[in-house]
Length: 255
Image (cartoon, rainbow, N blue to C red; front, side):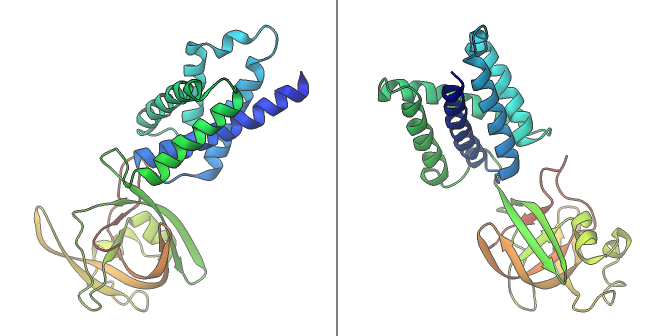
């Protein structure tokens, strides 16, 4: 029984990991691998306990739903997106059961094959997330400082650097301070703070309610947006971006 339990737990771990990757892709969020690993481990633990004598009830629909909720909290974090992503994960689990049943009677192997198919469909068959938002991972380097962020792909963001003509990545105030040391007070007074650090420039912008404005900007030699790494002009917003930690930067234009 123990070797069989370990075998089942390893396979369920792989299945849940694939489904978590697919869920994040469908909802337009970058996958944080360490969270997916923790969530998959919880799913594997649930599977291992469920096959023990006297614990078979944990495999029914109610307890599966409870554990999917727990997995969601671990894998996606406790923010406003967890309910939506948890529901998508639950639907993928239900779809997995139906697909694996249709493949045949090979039990756990049909489930693994079905999970691989669902994950590949989510990752490559759907170009954009089904939700209204799409998020991409961003990594910024400035000197010996390195900051990893989540950026919202804003299709309405057409901000360009007037000097180089390059599209601009907008970063929130907290990330700007961590990366460069610029304070919110300095970011709110861009003209007066232009000489705070070498290479700063003014990025003009327009928003609703403010006809003309400037943000401090800086060209960084190493910026990674998604899987693409290149030089990029980064503008520092005077306030934080997003709500409840959903994102800390905005991409747009050709980014």
